[in-house]
Length: 340
Ligand code: FRU
Image (tube, rainbow, N blue to C red):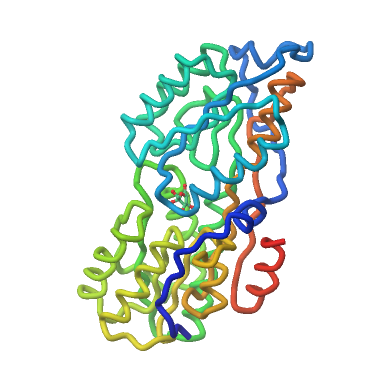
């Protein structure tokens, strides 16, 4: 099925804006933020302007740039908001310093997509304890010292991917099916959830087994060398499951370098950006076989920031964004939907 390994590097910002938005299901799963008094009193806020700090884990990845673009675009509709961005470049220490710096600047609200959970927990908790409302986007911290989390259900996405692979294996490799797993950064919560969910989904076919699992930290460049070594050690692998599309795409190149015939193996990723080099087009162009919409939540974060800051709304502890499975059967339709 796979014919081409070319990547377009152009990113259409317009598609990014619309493509990552998703309907949301609010689920108030926790008691809320009792100590976070600034967002909780009932009178509407009469302050005229608000400073929001957006702490990004690593702007070098296309999906994260899409998140920032979506926040910028959504904030434009609210002239009373000023959003300042910081890029931690996948460095936990830098991200802690970024948040400290925001607190010094006197931000009214923090939006953060934490690089890894444990190292960011203290500084996020500190912000929350100071009364700064905190919106966690996509990745979590430990404990519950934050106002709300917005993101998609990574365990469920992983499970759907596992079932997809299990079914493909049933049809195409009835005598046994070896899966290579390229994992995201270990201390980031989606990596664990996507890994655990996948294992649960794969169980539906006992002949399908993970034969090797390696970390490539969410990074395409790293996944090139990691997957190359995996194919060398496991020349009979049948499937690659990448915790995100860039890593799954990297493995396609490694498979071709290892002499695999285009179309022989199955490649599954996650993110499904509607951009020229994103996952939906990759499925359309028959490189990836399946991917899953992973909305950035940028738009929803701004919507909730406005409600919290201006209306003093009590936010739900969790807002779960919807995902969709993208396959050759629906990729054209999904691209249209997320590009309009
Ligand atoms: C970008 C990214 C996405 C992935 C998400 C998980 O940093 O790796 O590709 O879906 O983070 O947090």
